[in-house]
Length: 424
Image 1 (tube, rainbow, N blue to C red):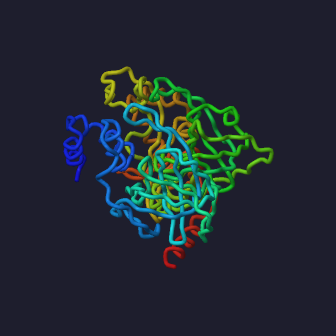
Image 2: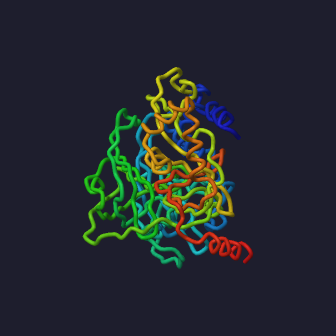
Image 3: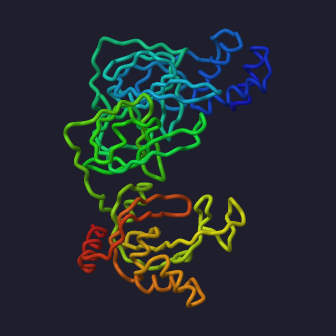
């Protein structure tokens, strides 16, 4: 049944307008409330009874739970318990989320009420709904569910508490605990759900990796670059193809006396980086085989920063463009290709001159393409070590470079090693 079918059935039971019920269901389901829980919520809202619509829940091992399981009863150890606020149906609502496990496996969960959950507790959850979340089943439980602490120990092969390194994080992780260093940070003002909102944005690092972060409420411990901190109750979302650490008003951030060491970039092949869906702070080594159109001298919209063509911005129409420099180069390491994007500063290094020098050259030649031609002659056919952040979308793989330097190694030796690896 789709939302409209559920709405028609529920509206008939309650004697209220179907469209009003359908809108309420859509708002709840949009914020991941399971359908049965959403229907129970609307029954309470319109004064109907809270029963009906759910089959008797069956006891299940976590390994056997699927999005088609209906309502289930499970007994499991809470591995992590995170807390954050979401907004649905115009109201703020605090949810609790994380992972739980039994001897057969583990699942993510979302609790829509405060059941007093604590990591390490063994609980029996009755009448939990199941939905699909990022391709996997997730338990959801709320007012129509029961949660009871059980005096027993389960032999689960997973750690309790959410302690993780940055390299271990995946999109969808909740209730995460980290020891990290603030590598980069800046305060920003964004258009949030309550109007203009100040946030912190930057990069966190540890020995294993570096990842972007957003703190939705500025925290003094995070505002100092180089500071080492312990973070509890963080959650992870995908940002440009890589995990991003999110720190909410319910997260706890405390300074660390012991400094956290930060590792360098992860050396990968293009194939590894692309097949993983993206990589943050990665280093690739390969040959530049082409400098694409749209390199060299370009003009950007003064409002949004997008590249414009003939004075036209796709968003803001006719504008007076601002001059800039960039390079879009194709890097090939033998396992695959990616587009490497160089900003103005790095492009000036490659070009061997400033933006003003490039403008002078274009005026003298009466052709701005002369700048891109000079860059092509300089870089095509050479091997480079490139460090940056690689993302993958429907148009292919792109790496925003923070470092672009000619390789000092022996290309023949590297080619031999690559062929040996591919043949293995």
